[in-house]
Image (cartoon, rainbow, N blue to C red; front, top):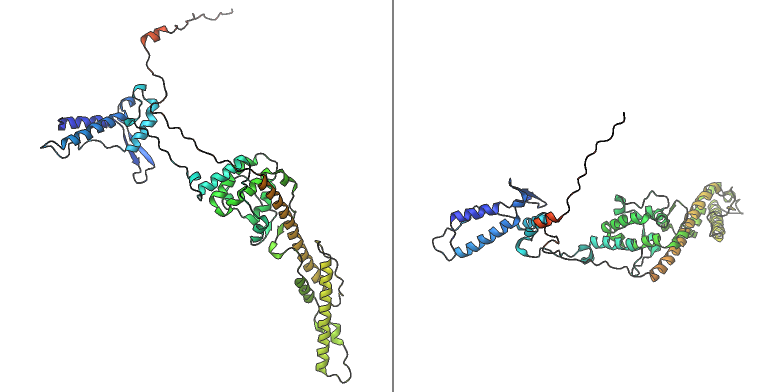
Length: 413
C-alpha cells in the first residue's frame, strides 16, 4: 500500500470537514468551542474524522516497512479532542439520518460512576443524601439516639424562647445557632402544616452538609415534625433559660444574699450594747461584734430555710426579717430573681425529659430508613428510531386531500 503527499493532503481535507471542537478556556475545560464550515450540517459528520484518522494510523504503521519515506506524511491532519468528538456524536445522533446515526468507533460510550453521596460514608454529600432520604420517608433512624438534656446543658449562654425563624431554607440553616432557635424550631416542626416537609427537604440537608456536628440532629427534627405526640407537649412560655445556673435555689447563695442585705455594725442595736462591770473598751467591742455576727448567722440560716421550704415555686414567700436590721427592699428582688431563674430552668428540664421519653419510644418503634439504589441502563448503540425513508408507492398510497370549493358568503342587500 502506497500513500503519497497528495493522498495524505486529501485525507486531511476529508477529516477537516468534521467540525473542530476545542476546550474553552483551554486551562479550565469547562466549555467547548465549535467551528463549523459553510456546509450543510448533515454533511459535517463526525465519522469523517474517525474514518480518516483510522486510515491515517494504518498508513503510518505500513510506512515503517517502506524505505525513503518522509517522517511526517500528515503535517496538516486536523486534531480533535476525543472526548468532545464522542460527546458531539452522542448529542447529534438523533439529528442525523437513521443510516448514519451510529456512535463513533461502534463502542459503548457509557461510563458508570459511583455516586459520592452513597459510596463515601463520611462525605458531606452522604450526610445530605441521608438527611433528604429521612425527610422523604418521614421517619427516623432507630440506630440514632440523642440525649437532648445533655445537649442543651452543654450549650454556653442562654436558651432563647423568642427567636425569629422559618423552616424555609436560607443561609442561617447552614450553621444554625441552636441555643437561639431551639424552642422556636421545636414549635414550628411540631405544627400541623403539611408544607413544612417541602421546606425541610432543603433546610435539613443543607444543615447536615455544612455542619457535620449537627447531622445527628436531623432525625430529632424529623421526629418533632412527624410524631403527633409532640403537638401536645408544649414547652414553657418563658423568654430565656440559663441551665448552667441549676434547677433549684442554692442555699449558700441565699445565705450570702441575706448577709449582704444586713445593715452595718454601726447601725445595728449590738453596737449600743452597754458595757459590763469592769469590762474594757476592747472587750466590749469584741462582745458586740460577736453578738452582731451571731445574729446575722442565725437569721441567715432561718431565712434560707424558710425560702427552701417553699420550693418549688416561682415566687418565694415574703421575707420575715426586721426592716430595721436588714435592707429588705434590696433582698426581695434578688431572691425573686434567683428563684425565678431556677424555676424556669426546672420547667425546661422537665419538658426536655418528656421529649426524651417520646423520642426513645419513637426510636424503638421505627423501622430502618430504606437506602435508595441507583439503577443504570446503558443506552443503546443505535437510537431506537424508525427509518426516515419513504418509497414512492407509500407516498401515492396515501389518500388525497379533500379540496372543498370556495363559496363566497351571501350578501344581504
